[in-house]
Image (cartoon, rainbow, N blue to C red; front, top):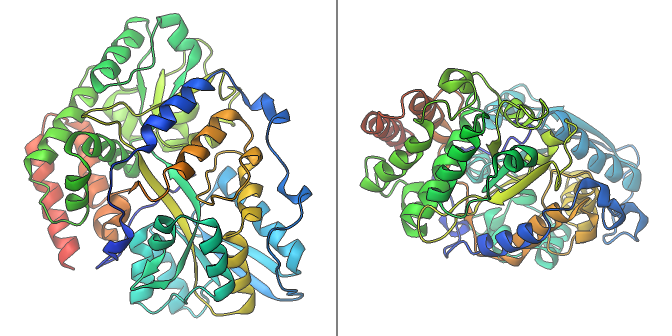
Length: 464
């Protein structure tokens, strides 16, 4: 993945008004809804999977016959294919010729090269709050037009609108959201082991031991992609240290040498440091990319390489590449509570206009509409922050429950911490937070050394 290139960071001087305060209350609703629908599978498309194109369009788009539009994103595989279906529908409705431009991480560097060469894409899907800020600082980004703003006002909670604003001006349209606080498990492994879905971190460690005792390695970790490790840390930190500390660390108002960071790393080390709990050991995990961390959890019959894998709702995309059915073979529970409350960390991808044009503005308008959201929703592995997207578009009850929990949360959520950081710290392979946490995975006893490395890199990045 990045099939789901979830976001990682860039940006200086981020717009702090975009980061909503408040406790993360999605967790309770999510626990209830996931528990209520654990038996549903992708086969229940008779209840959902609505084809959005069968309905009357919710938004009117201009005729753009002959107009050419390039849209860049880091999505690959199934995510890229599903996004192309959205772009294809836009092309059918408007007559525009839309081309998908594959981008690389970090996307700001990719766009910088394109712009320097005189060939920027018209629209880029930016997976970090900080990336929007940086695109504005570099004077690449163009403001969102009135028609798209009208769609945002009608279809989005204020918090999701504000995430796309810089200095009070709307530059981003958040199209794809993510709930990055989920643990997916192989139902047959749990059944054979007699394991139960845990609610607390203590229960989670006990469940892992139960799976281990049954002869299956408990966890699959995609450590080759450093962003998965930042997500592990963020969930533990948010639940254990609380939302105020989370916001302070996200803004580097407290240092990474703070005792709260020590506590979170120590907690994570309880898991990573347990012998034979991670598939392939630390060395194997560091060579395992995210997609493989999912597929190896749901292949191999009753002896897969691991019983559980942590990551967001987009895990469903990779499960779809196996024979496992979501809701029957592959089930999910909320990330366990380490402190008083279970965490919910959100991520997202925003469309940003880089070249002013009628076609580009029309695409932003379309992406802010329920129509566009419902197209990808029907393919699975996707959540929309669009509150007017029909939940019936999602292919099964598990995904419908996730989408409903996201919408019901309104403005009350926490955005991915590393996606708020400067790119050099929170969003660059082999550097900063990604590298420090990969080193920690290899040596989870070195909490102090990890803190020191994190703070040294953060101090440079935030200063710059």
